[in-house]
Length: 223
Ligand code: C5P
Image (cartoon, rainbow, N blue to C red):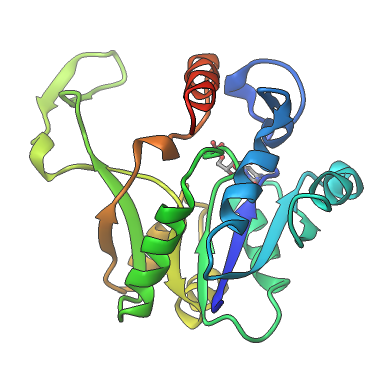
């Protein structure tokens, strides 16, 4: 394998309701992070996995993941971007492709990990999995008044894993300014072209209680 996967898993998960940090919330009896790491480790290209855990949970996350796959666990940061940077700093020399994958996308199929890695290997500096947008999208003002309708055909919903040639991601994080919600956004600011590949509905981000219910159903039916 020539791929390192960074897993930011240090978020609180406020939108999921009160309880443990999001990555440690149970899905069918196991934490989201366990489901996510098991699927990443099943992708043949993956050599290294680095998880950024909540600082208070580093020890327990190490114990939790030891039976699942060989992983390095580091303390995350206050923002997702800081968590990714901390994980990137812990990647040993070797892997030349680095993927960043949210723990909250716990049911992401190993085939999506492989297809993103393959697109980077084939020559793209930065690769993101995307889906078409199904809803009509309106832009609104602060008073919820509609300003206009956006052309949906030109929009994509972006998932993870996002894949990068290692020096491209390192340079983007080294010069990062205000925190962004994804790593491709940092790379775009560097003027690097970002290439889209088809995403997967199973890579949904488990964010709200509804998503958890959907994920339980998907698991029960074979995901
Ligand atoms: O909050 P959001 O759903 O965008 O978080 C996406 C991912 O980033 C989650 O897997 C979450 O655990 C992670 N995260 C992190 N460190 C933070 C905030 C979020 O690793 N400080």
